[in-house]
Length: 125
Image 1: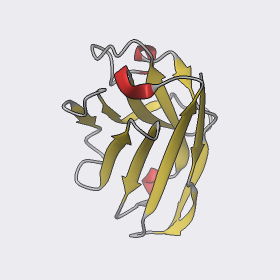
Image 2: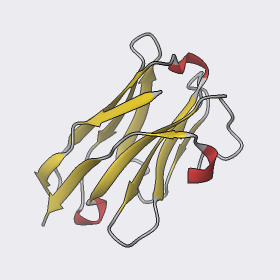
Image 3: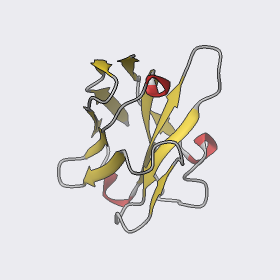
C-alpha cells in the first residue's frame, strides 16, 4: 500500500487549499481513511476521518466548519478541502488508511496502519 499526498503550499490567512491523497497497490473501498497534521517536535494531531461508506465523519473541533473530508472510492482518492485557513493550521499534513475498515479508533493515529509521506501547509498571517 502506498499513499501519495499532495496539494500543500503557502497561502495567506483566509485562503483555501485542497489536499489529495491517492492510494496505490490497494483498493480503499472498504478502508477507513483520515487526515492528521504535525508540527516539528509535537505529536501528530487528528484533523478529519471518514469511514469506507462516508456515512461516518469526524472532525477535530479546531477545523469544524472550515475543512471538509471526502473520498472517491472509484478513483482511490481521499480529499481534504480546507477553507478559511488560519496560521494555526500550519503543519505537515498526512493521510492515513485503516486497511481493515475499522472505525473504533478513527480519531487516533493508532487506528491506522499505513501513512502517506506528508505535504506541507503554511498559512501566513
